[in-house]
Image (tube, rainbow, N blue to C red; front, top):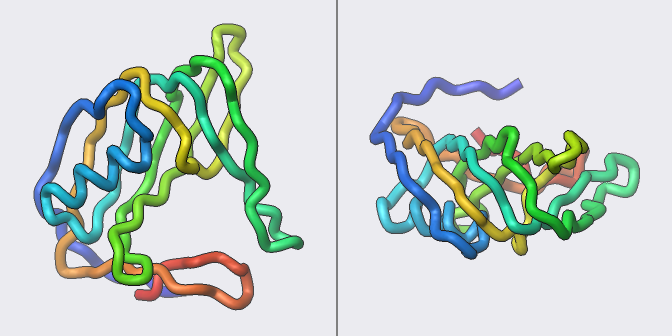
Length: 142
């Protein structure tokens, strides 16, 4: 187990642009404010979603689309460095009007209808992702 203590830095609260890609909008918030490590939460809704499930045996993501408007029940993620770039990583749970839920890893192509973000910068720690042989994932290197 690897755990480190971080200090809370600046807090950003904002509205993400209608019609934007969710991950791109989160990355833009981080880049514009020079945030290298953070946690974030998003509420709102999306016009369509591109999600993935990680197959633990095959060690690869299986992606799927939700091609209808849905409400963001929960979206949580973090900002870390991956190969020298700011990398937003998020998981989401969505619901449709019938209460059917969809969830998983957020991929490019998730389009915002309305979204509000709460981002907390982490200080005295640098979150970096590197390849983990056991899981096949790019996990924190602390």
